[in-house]
Length: 109
Length: 114
Image: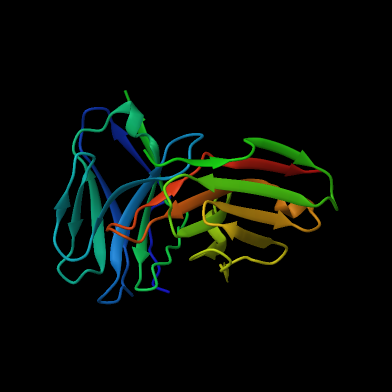
């Protein structure tokens, strides 16, 4: 199974943009890139996903490298409520998703 | 809104007890999953089910079994609980009729085995 690598933790200031990186050098051509986040005391929730092109939704943007070996989740203006663990996951054809340890984002006021 | 509910938020059991963790979803989703979450290890997949009466082993199935007799319910069973099964257990469901095949998670059950 293709794996992802993320930094253990990152810090951001409130109201500033945050770029959360993810490396997936062994990604296959049909793997989708998914991002989930887990707020304190809750189960993970879907954030965004993409295949090749950059994607935007109301929560975030996803920038995918041209070779697809890395991607970046972008929160345009971090708020205190964005403090969470962010997971970058590859979804393969069999639709299984394996979550790693993720990146713990701390947002400072 | 999709709802995934788990039978308990907190559970304390003794070593050797048989433990049932129940998960129910109300969106007629085909797929259901059980994960455990431990500090520094993220979520690890225990078992999953693509449909009623179907089950597949995940990455760490040892010491666990599952049951899916009805589409909306997926049970995780610890036949003889041990202290190393103390963990947060998360259930998820997923429909296969539309992208992004988003997984919806329950709030989790924190199980302590003493």
